[in-house]
Amino acid sequence: MQEINWSDFEKVELRVGRVVSAEAFPEARNPAYILHVDFGESIGIKKSSAQITDRYALDGLVDKLVVAVVNFPKKQIGPIMSECLVTGFHDAAGHVTLCVPDGDVPLGSKLL
Image (cartoon, rainbow, N blue to C red; front, side):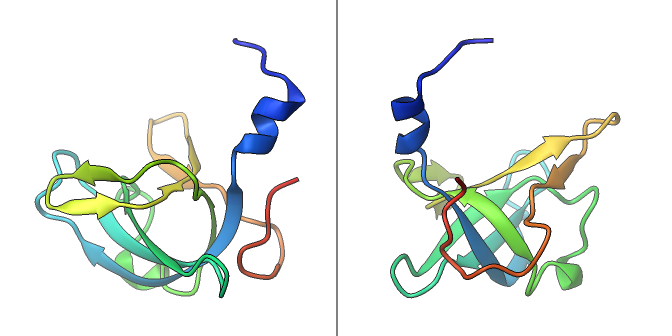
């Protein structure tokens, strides 16, 4: 594991957002959804591709709070431009479980 210093960590903008819409992403190489995540007034809504189809149904994602990196450069993923990286952890089977706050927090809140 590579060690980083505090100033490296401070550069990463891990923010809380709310999924406002989710749709299938049939053009993705691996099964994925397109998520539109609202990070509040100062950041706005950002789009992301998320390979979470094994554990989450589309209809259960809307209104879900998620944690995402919002200061990576945009990345072209097939026909969409991903604007943030929604975070998660692989379970024992390799499926992604979303990283979510344990309670309701204001949109755009930064992970400390």
